[in-house]
Amino acid sequence: MKKFVIISFLLLGVLVSAHAYGFDIKGLKPTQPNGVFSSFSTATNGPGIFSNEVELEECIDPTFYRITTSIAYGIDDNRELLATVPFRLKREQNGFEDVSVGLKHRFVEERGLLPSLALLMTVSPPSDGSDVTTNGRYGGGLIASKKIGPFMAHINAFYFSPFDKTLKSEWDMLLGTELSAANNINILAELSIRKSHFSNRFDFMEGRLGYRYRPLKYLYTTLGAGYEFRSRTPELRFLLSITFVYPYKEPEIKRLYEEE
Image (cartoon, rainbow, N blue to C red; front, side):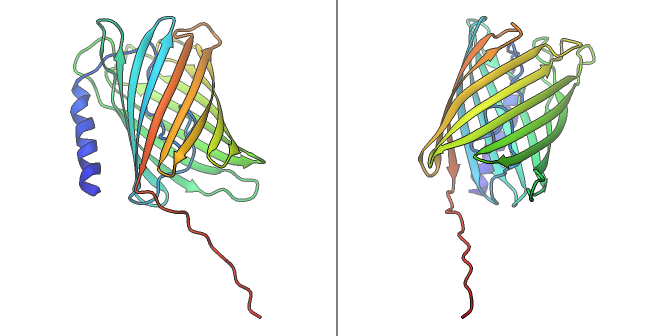
């Protein structure tokens, strides 16, 4: 298992030299079920747990396709390593976008009215000379998760600084919610607000809606659609992802026994 994880991260590193910039920057993304679509939860994979997600994305106006591979590996009970590799398909402009790697660390557990809190640190290594990427960036931010009745809510606030000084810093705000509709089905909703590397103000606002279905204990499928409210491209996107979690471990059930 450890050899497989090491090989996966090495392969991701090799892909850094290939790149292409899409109409929006994918960046680091969570693997299911530790997030919604792009918003992270504070949950992490347990020690030695590996998850691999493949997402198919169709964007409209302009139309292009993207295949994104994401992996996450649990270091211990509160930390996990993550990596994301997006590949864009658009006529003769096919190619890899910037690879992103990161570390998530949960430092506060949910208690009473207080949410759980986690830090996310991420970096995209510089690409070699193309003017259609950010040529690398670094950043991170804060993640908060809280169970509110039947809902699980997540708030993300991220900042990214590009290595290319001709670009501007990016600010991301993500609000995600999950509703458990059945034992193996969750309804997902998300709002993404962004000030991109090309603007001095928040120029992107997209709402996403979908569901997550777990047909097997170690398998998650997610289907969703997003609409951009500020008419910034792309205006519409459809998402389909499949996530494998290995090895699957049954949750521990703690029982309390009263002495007679």
